[in-house]
Image 1 (cartoon, rainbow over the protein chains, first blue to last red):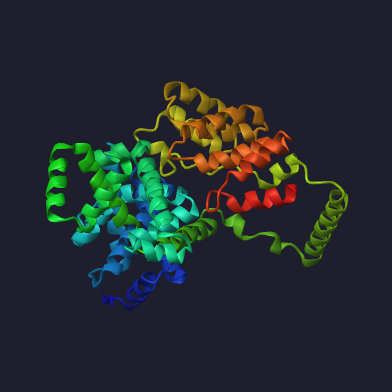
Image 2: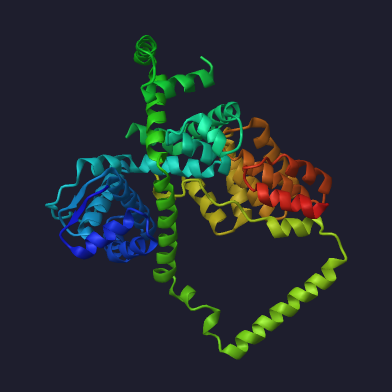
Length: 193
Length: 255
């Protein structure tokens, strides 16, 4: 069971709502932290759409961290999300050789190494999600079960078909996904970063 | 090495279930084959990113929260819809709508649903997925591509079709450009131009847009009132593929 620690009880409650994916908690986090992120990104060469993109990526990284186990929040949730978004956006600007218009004061809160590495992979992860979402429903189901380490026999039973069919279909779906990612114009660039 | 065999080896290697000798052999191959090395990394990253049912549910909820936020903050007018009308006007609107529906059903019930009717009921331009995220800022996005994407998103399909066609001259192998040109042509009621483009995609069977092209090819035939050809294409849409349920629905109404 995940142990969540936060100095502020409201933040604690929100974090406890994010993990099971409760919509009211997610919406409350949007209200709490997104406006400041939008303002900051706009001041630094970005748009509201950019800000909302990286905000989603930051929340996914946070969700993954909460999923993994114990989590201690050493600042407010709003600051924590803002730092994640700031790091994400600065790395995008660096990769795109664009300037940051205002030099931010140095934040005293360091991000967890786990979250840092998640954020580094975030753009690539979004690419994987995009192509996964483009697959047919059956393909998505088979791959989902397969990635979750469900034995092929069990997948076959769940989808009311034969193990042999699942084995073939799993290969076809995975090949489709991998090839789609590899031929995406953004993939080569992201791999070189 | 066969593609399926390669995938099996990569999966065994990543799962740690490979026998010692086979593992050593595979690791030797990895040392001398950088393409294989990159593919192993990609398989691992894809699996790590997509595993866990929770993440997909969470992403869906994030998307909803984002849409809700946009409606509330970016477009305040959207939150004051029809309900702000006085109740009598609202009832009048509802009554008129009901009359229209009844009249339509009365006149329509005697005739079989024509191809163009079916087309109109089921056609929507495919969502834009090319460089969807921060498209205009991506360094590899050419101005011409940005213009094509923007025209498509703004439903200026004549400009979009022209722009995607021009882009293909520079990148003839990029079938996503062909796909979006085809959808732009269809959106302008030009099925005869869209059909060869969609057939071209299906003939090359790329990893992307095959299922989508199959669906839009069927719709293109419907738009041309060629119900026989449309039926053939709809029957090719297999269970679980893009728009399978709608295809079945059309097939039923054609009978």
